[in-house]
Amino acid sequence: MTRRLFALLALVAAWFGVAVLAAAPASAHVELLSSNPADGARLTSAPAQVSLTLSENIGIQPNSIKVVDTNGTNVVTGPVFQPGDIAEQVAVKLEPDLPEGSYLVEYAFVSTDSHPVRGTIAFVVGTGPLITSAGAVSASTGTDPVTDALFTTFRWGSFGGVALLGGLVFVLVCRPAGRTDPAARKLITVGVGLSAVTAVAGFLLQGPYVAGRGVDAVFDPALIEATLRVAYGKLLLLRLAAIVALAVIARRLLTVDLPERSRSRYENLGIAAGFLVLLSFSATGHAVADKIMFLSVSADLAHFGAMAVWVGGLIQLAVLLRGRYPAEEAEPSLARFHSIATVSIVIMVVSGAYLGFRLVPSVEALWTSSYGIVFLLKLTGFAALLLVANVSRTAVRRGIAGRGDSGVVTADLRRLRVSVGVEVLIVAVVLALAAALSSMSPTG
Image (cartoon, rainbow, N blue to C red; front, side, top):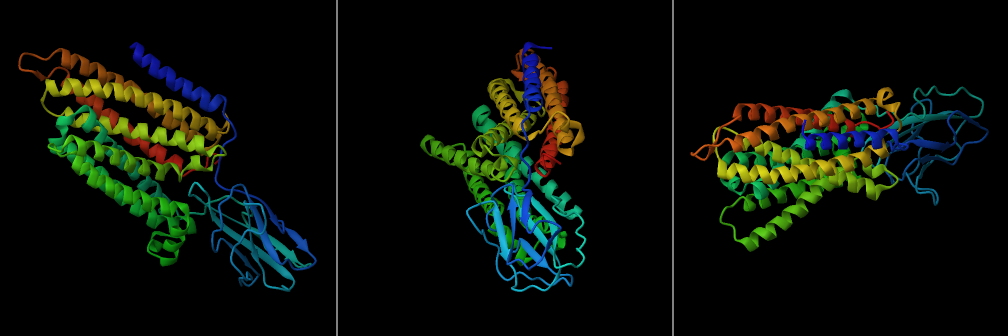
């Protein structure tokens, strides 16, 4: 085992130690802290309104609170509003002089990390029986299982699309000759298409995902309108616009005879568009719900960006290693990518350590919660990826050192293809685990 590999594994161990052994209380989806009337309350007179105090400020979400009587009739008379100076408190007005009886308050909110939270509370006016409210004051999402599976799958695809787009950095910085390689260009084109398709799918699925409905409701105008009202919907549209811009920018940057001045301008525009794409992920994930939002979102941006550059370069490297390739192109490309990959890994470890510190609630949560178990699996996959990557680097060094007079690298090519292929497979699994984590509550 090389010193470099030992250092990388030490970083992973440090990530684990900081993220778990010193873990702080986790951020989670929005929770109901209290209500007025309280759940199970018996009142001598009808209340004028029902108010709910939440764990975070989610703004005013129309139709997020409904109050019904035993016949299922809605007794709310106005829109959801904030009744006072407490930003985390929302309320609805009730019909005046409600008759005696039992009433059920149903709430459905979208937290700042874009996940739905639903629950019920019940109260009685007079001495009648209380409506049974199974799951009262519950943070259960109540999401349709098919919609939930599709939502997570498309999120996985969106991560993959961003990773493929990250390969543009490899082509521009490490392998300029790849601008004319149809296979390298195709990967970037697939990244653009996959990112665009998953952004549209995520936008359409958000409504049914929040409302607990099936995929047959993806084109429901009311649900689409509800998605447009929240930050998640707006950020997805921003992502789609940035992806369209990236498609145009990438096409120009992959032009061989582009003037240097124009190339610099398009590179700056590409950086800006790429930042918006990354921001649309970080601003709708768990990081945005953290109390130290600026640091957590910044760490998430760095983590996701480093992942895109590293994984995108790795996939492009697999293209570079197909068949027989010129040593004068391979050697500098591999040397440049080695430096970029090392920096990317360090950034991922440091930012991942901070995010784990903020999200993993305790050591026990690693085996007592779904989030903790998936977090451990992702961390294990990342460590395995570093081990296999070390095999690839060794094969590359031997291959370049063994080139003959023909100027073509052929040594250890089979071993290198296998190790890089395994890396790409592990990356796919790690991205799937990341997609699952993004849909789970850290305390769940």
